[in-house]
Image (cartoon, rainbow, N blue to C red):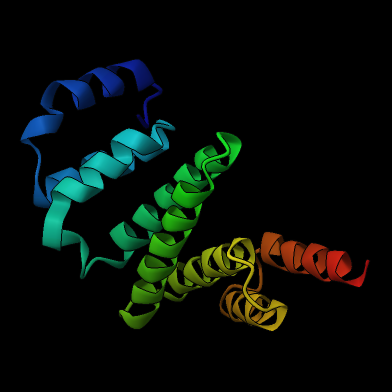
Length: 157
């Protein structure tokens, strides 16, 4: 993947995917996500089993996969599926925030939680609080402040 051989990575992933469990399944899931295949990523994360529960990186990636799938469900007008993916993403993100992880990983988890809460129509204060926590942990990430500002401007309309 890093060498620009995406098709070779896809073939390798398809070839051995049913044999992967634990950390290997997590690695395959992250690769599938990078290849923009959230359905395959979701299958691999599910195969990882309990290995995912103590891994903040895997949990964050799994939550992001669920957010991608919620977007697909939204475009397909499958509201029940969309909300289920969002609720599952929220649970995963809250788990990431309970685990010991780098400030950067926690910042991204707070950002993803803010987005998830917004899409779940949580109170604006909860969404803003999550953005503020992300910004406090990673102030150099301009995207967080920009998203918060856009959210606040929309709320004033």
